[in-house]
Each structure stands twice: as structure tokens, then as C-alpha cells.
Image (cartoon, rainbow, N blue to C red; front, side):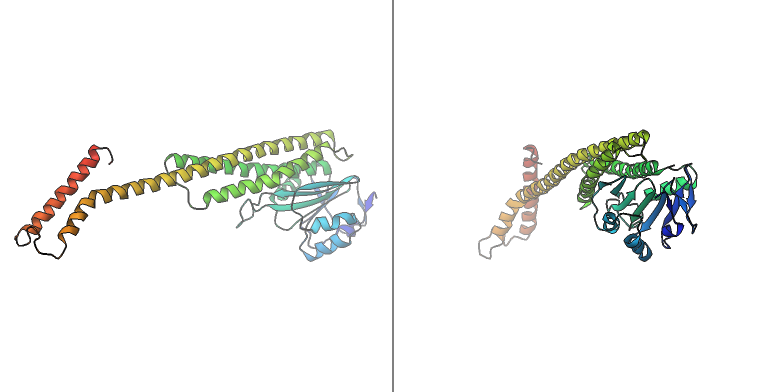
Length: 327
């Protein structure tokens, strides 16, 4: 198939519909009778839109084996080779508003030498970056460089988020040095984000490594070299995530230690206060019995003298505790 009818690529609710011009730019797809397939066409669809879903289920331009994958619920990064093309599932850091970055978004791609079909549900900013480059005339020239540019942008976003996690850990460590305990749930959310990133970025690195090792006519040696560099860069990010997991475990232990020390200090303080007032409590209890013969019971200044003795007793016990270095 060296030509595609223009109407076969017409999807009314497509997010992107264009053909790479081979010079870093793009050519919009219209209802031309014939499209020359020397350069790949790119369709970017939201598979939850009706027209896009109908096109994915009925078009003869993609294999039957990838229809469900392009609009399915599979979220784990993976790659399958289909003849001279790939079916790829990748994850991206969520940069959408009112969403946490660790609520990763998925992008699914079917790509060969003639056609690129990418689908998503939530917006993927890496796709927008590649589209902006194409509109500016400095984007990918072919399918291989398009795939590398998308993976490069995805890895850039992941690396930036991993760096943010690293900075948050440093802030928590510095705060703990000043005996400042983080807000409840802050460390738990941080650990969750690290674990989610580790879970999905590890297989994504393997996807990049496999793409770098495959030899297809539309991916040259430079594309494979760049893909291997992207895989290595993501691998270094995974090493940082492993270190972050260990550091958060140390943080959790240190926070528990700080809280335990604070509780012990409070308990110790309360115990000393009880010890200071224990003799006075005994005396007030003894003199508070309603029986005859209480010393000073009929003396006009008896109560005042008794209170003064109690103050002297408290001061004396406190001095003794201070001398024994308990206070």
C-alpha cells in the first residue's frame, strides 16, 4: 500500500490529523483523493470520542489485533512488534490541572512506516510538545524520529518529576534536623508517588530498550542510538527512585523516633511535676480529714502558715530534683 485515500484518514473529532513533510514540518490532511505514503501520516485521537472510536473499530488501515489495544484499558507500558510496525503503550506524568503528577496518563501508539495512530483519554503534554515542534518546522522528519521525540519528551517530564520528589525528600530531611515533623500524610503521599513511578517507569525503560534493539527500515541507527540514550536516562531516574525509597524509609524511622522522644519528654515532665507536688498532696490530704485534733485548727493564722510551708516544701523538692540533675 503506497497510497491512502484522503477520506480514509478523515476523522471529524481527531485531535491531530497531519502528514509529516520530511523537513520537520507537517501537512494537514484534507479530502484529497490520494495521499502519497512516502512520508507517514499521523492521527492523534481521543478514543472516548464517538467518531474516533468508530474509526478505530472500522478502519482497514490498522490491524485487527491492535483495535482493542488502542482503545482498551491496558495501562502498563509494553511494546509488541507487528510485522514492520509496533503497538506501544506508554505512561506519562500527569501535568493536567487539578490532577497529581503521579496519576499517570496513558498514550497508546500504533506505528509503521506509513501510518502513526496515537490515542489517549486524558491530555498528554509530550504530544503537544512534538506538535508544536512540527508547527514551528523543527519537528521529526519521519516515523522513527517522531517516536524518539515522543519518548524523549515523556522521559523529560518523568525526570523532572523525579527531581521534584528528590527535592521534597531533602526538604523533609532538613526539617527533621530542626525537629520539625511533616504534616500528617505528607510522607505517605511522597512514598506513594515514588512507588507508582517506580512501578510504571521500570517497564517503560524496558520498552525503550527493546525499541532501541529492533531493526526496522523506518528507524535508522541514529534513532536507535537516541532511543538507547533515553532508556539509559530513564534508568538513572529509576536508580534515583530506588534511593528515594530507602531515604523515605529512614525518614519514617526518624519521624517515629522524634515523636517517641517528644512523648517521652512529655511523660518525663509530667512525672516530675507529680513528684514535686506529691508531698503537698499527701499533707493536704492528711490535714483535710474532718477529725478533731488537727494541729493549728484553732489558730487564726494556721491556714496561712500551712500554705507557706507547702510552698517551701515544693521549692525544696524542686531544688533537690535540680541538684540531682533530674530537672
